[in-house]
Image (cartoon, rainbow, N blue to C red; front, side):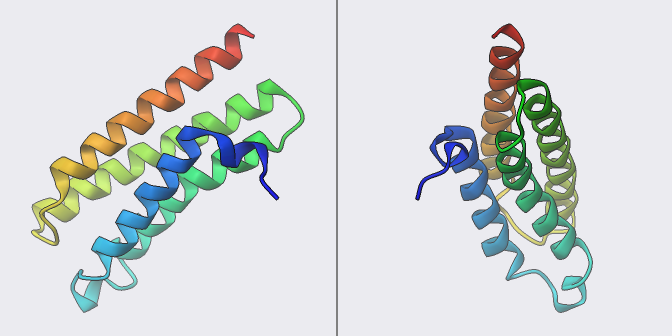
Length: 117
């Protein structure tokens, strides 16, 4: 069964980003297993999760609120990507930041479309 949110390109992109985050954090130092690695994983999952949860709410106003939360989680993840790159935990910053920028724009576009409806 396909839910409405599963047809949203922004949700699909957020899921792909979360998958990428999981893959790169596998190679973080062992001492980061419960630190930055977990924070990055939670933030990345939160983006897609909030899109899905908001989509299941009854009104566009509620959906928009959850899209803003997803956008905040995306910015949290962006900060963590910068830090993990500065600590030389990965060399994927440019690629991941391009994806963050793309998803951020998609979230903004969806928010504006819902506000205009």
